[in-house]
Length: 450
Image 1 (tube, rainbow, N blue to C red):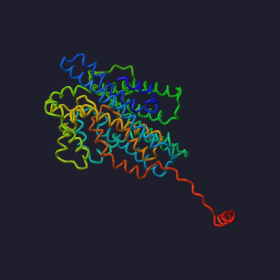
Image 2 (cartoon, one colour):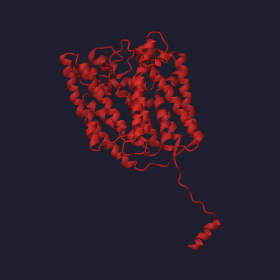
Image 3 (cartoon, rainbow, N blue to C red):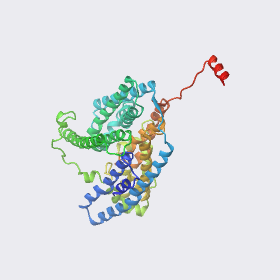
Image 4 (spheres, rainbow, N blue to C red):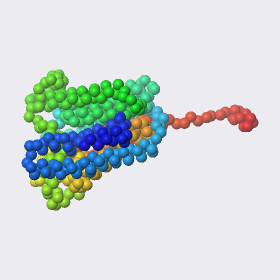
């Protein structure tokens, strides 16, 4: 599990250049090794044997393959995108981007408060029914902001860090975008997801570190940033637990006492060794997966189809949502374990294994390696405006290791139209080379002199 330490000592990985790859690898270690190992102590011997089987296979097929593939892809991208482009900020496109993102953020807050959807932990059936009761416009605003908010904040921070717009009003515009989108998305994750809150802080801190000038020596400001990150992450987890306990007891998410990190929390929630356990679902279905063969993509059919909803909403997709059968893991548990469960703890490896067998470990490693390489190299300002846009979007989608692999594979499809629109009216542009203009008289004199 300590392969990154060896890689750093050998120079294969460097800090903070490879921070996103390190963050992804660390999550894999938690979900695939640490949490399952703690949980296994209280499990039957045959289940422990299954855990051990998956742990040993994860070492070469995920840990080793991820690091090797990441370094290969990142090295090639660094050679291809070797020279940082001279970037300028398009004023008109900036106004459109910032106003659009802020309006979407305010719209989300309005829908969340008026339709009582700020707190989403209503159970899979409850949240699906509540969202289906929204109008098309309400649902579009509500879901779009939650999907796009990390991208808005990351892209705004990258523009401020890399392009450094000289106009004060443009700087203020982009700072407003960063503050509003980050604050309202932070409110959402603070109420609903401790993990998403921690990863959002880590993503923004990673952008700050990776866009700073490279230095071989330890810089005090970077050490302070890392310490602030750790403290902020712990605080976010604690406040999120306070809010959950307060709401479950009939209180308000906006109670000021929720901000007190010393408050007592944890009213009966599952322990972290269960919530972060990415092995258990595979152990449940392993016998039948080996006997019947993996699903070979069938478990991804419904998540893929639901990407077109609600634009092409059908009776089938509505029944799947109301029945809380929208995920790959619900299909796999029903198919291979006979369990009707919609929110079982899992990670990317879980549904990849159910669909591809042990080859799923390798598939996840290769996809994550490529995504982390694009984010890590692209956000250092190399490759131009299009690369920066893609890298910001990739980072906003790839980080949560807890998400299903299906979400990483297909979750971006419904977001593509807006990304294409931003690409067409790109707020970042390459600076055009200056054109030397010579008047006719000057040109004749120049020719005569020659």
